[in-house]
Length: 185
Image (cartoon, rainbow, N blue to C red; front, top):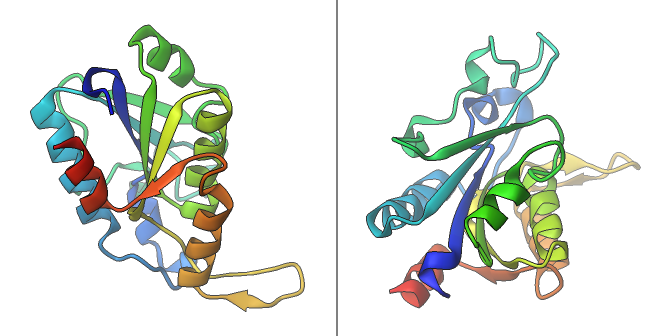
């Protein structure tokens, strides 16, 4: 990985995902792993982009007037780190993310955040489709259990694993936090 052409995306690591309404979650250490990666990025002086989901619905946990809108303290932006707000699953739609990456000559994107089957997956797919060398960090993202159209429940670990499988080698290279750090150092 060419270090000066690499960016870290931290997608939707917001207090909204602490709400009990989401149910069972896997990868309880995802935020700690993101913090470890973020620490390395800051040490190297590489580009960090925080993505923050925003809702116009005042009842949504992602509405700016609600506590859930806030980025979790463990990965809080500092100094001149970029913060982009989005209203849909993809961090590229309706935002200037692609323009920022291109303006900074970024060729490699490392993606972390919440949640694996939704905004993380959609952002990963688009990053790969837009031609960026994309890495998704498997233990720096997480999923919640969910039901399908037939009301069959799938636990969070299954949702997470299947989401990663659908992205692996098609849209991104899947790595763990330790694998990423070892490749960079």
